[in-house]
Length: 534
Image (cartoon, rainbow, N blue to C red; front, top):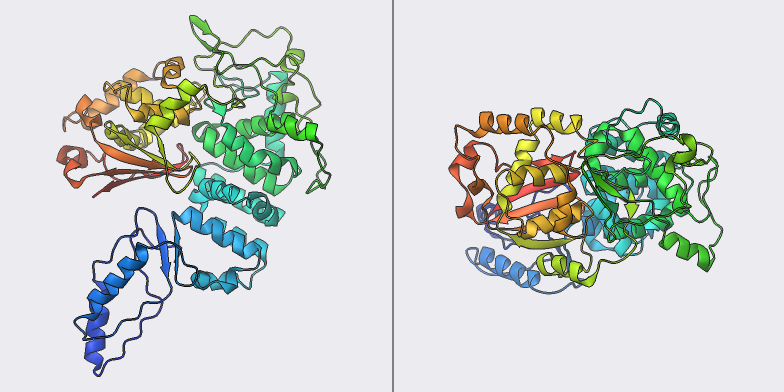
């Protein structure tokens, strides 16, 4: 069941009592080709039993009508169970497996093969089957209050295996502990780390670590040793959400920065390799310190312009540098390591910082007005919005071509986010800066508002990119501002982005140019992107 495609209908058992076998066969054929009612985008609905009787020609219509009635009713654990998404379904299944309840619920029958396995194996197996959904599954588990319990049920080896598989899916080989230690030591000593324009002990992400991401993982990480496979898997998922492009190019440095960053903010960090879980309780002061970690210096500087944004900057004079991590090196600040070092002035200093304060009400209203939270959840990680510039997502197919991926990798230190590349490329086609899609991109970059997009550098290798655009799309004539004009609804989650547009929005030149095909899994964006035309 978990491998079914969208809009699939699966019948576990069909029993037809008819006087003639031919009548039963015809009914089966009719049901297989029937136009079954839709459950809704990404929804999963389990119906325990449908039972009808009558003339053979009447049965298909009766079954479809009864199915439609069930789809329009709320959950009834005895007959109907619905889930808003596969991630929500899997979070519920993992929770029931952990608590030993899965075997008692009729709607989990298709996963019966998991019931007799050790819990750690069953859970790691399901997560392995759905690696691209891991960010969304973790959010859904956190919403249920079960993330820590499910994560702790994984074995150290199982978590390491998942981390290796996830790294492979993201396009790199997972660095071992020695490589991460070496990366941090290089940065600590300011030696051999050739990463122009970005200091990874401060700048691992294209913006800030969102408060929701911190609250999801911080307490869990505080209870694990940094050498534990479960800790490493969590850090890798955080890196996937905030810096997948940079992670592809410099995995050891990005992971070292995040290891060190979370080490700073832990109230009682654990460094021993043989300590898997910390059982000691925390004091109120420690809990508060964990919830409001100390901020690093977040000054963002552009060549020829230095601007400290009070809404996104904070100065912590006593905060130790990440490169001085106890996990990786003896504690030292970056200044102690190299007192004579010149101030870094990158074209885009994307600070690894904490969004510990809520947005000002006026700025938050921009997102709340334009990005509508899914009615089935209060979490803004799962939401939708209308756009008139939906064609901007067509450019993901352009960025995903081998030559452009190579350019992005070459300049990942300067522009470490695929979202930033998409936005700057859209500006070349006169992107409407007032569109809700621009607000969405701002949010993906960890910014408070679209105005802060002005802090991005100029598009790297601009002449090369425009030459490629002309070579690839010049003959079709699609490389025009009109390419972006597409009224659509966009649904998004931590793992997926789905664009929904009417069938009459399909344009033959765009199709011939290969721009409106499903991008699917984009490792450098860390998302699965799909286009739907209804």
